[in-house]
Image (cartoon, rainbow, N blue to C red; front, top):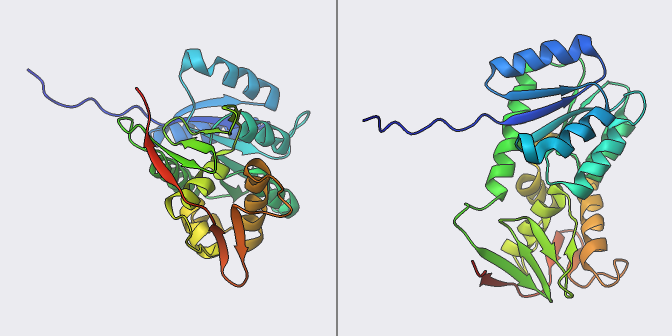
Length: 251
């Protein structure tokens, strides 16, 4: 009798880049590093593969080039953060600093500048996957957070408003809200939020935190210009200024 536990399934990556000379050898390298890699040469092809994901098995992370013919990576990233809970790492050229900033602000998890060392990319991928894993509870947990009529189900990563409607949030917005809900009425400065939400290794900046907080406020505040739930603490950071209740969900 063999009692050896089955090996975990490899993380499944969607690699989207129109340059075959970069995409194909990179895909081969990542496969040798133990990832399951699906390659796409355009945003349109990536959308098609994502639509097929329920049948083929879900993706764990998207590697996304910014500059592509047709729909660019920024547009596809915006679609991903609005409709799916998928971490995104941008593959960018050196001259695209503005695009990198925009990408991070709309919800990408990290970026790597071309030309890059493949080992660095692997380290970034594993770091992002670890953060995504840490922010998701174990499958046996069935606890949710309730605050001011809102409910966040961490297992399903689902935000539900006072009327029972599901509100779409990106993976970054989910981790940001979860950080606030786990530390209600505590001041969280920008450095701590970076560590909790994206990690300092992402080379982000304070303004990116501010923009993500602004995006989250537009989802949960009655008036995002006069926020009552997520308050700014001048010189300190941000605070969730309400009580949070943990509830057990019905099976």
